[in-house]
Length: 64
Image (cartoon, rainbow, N blue to C red; front, side):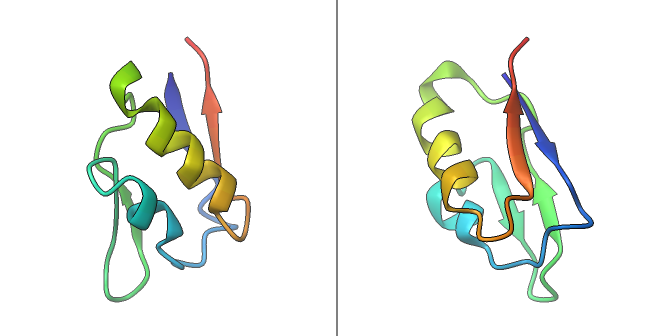
């Protein structure tokens, strides 16, 4: 699994960080950093929720 971000769509709402704080970090300026672009299967449920709840649909998962 690999996380892909469309930074043109991301507005820094931090919903992803709320769902998967070990994988995503959003700065006070609203800039997203993917801490782990290839998270483990143990993190899959949290990452899927982060993708689901992204209000701008800036995130998606690509399977390896």
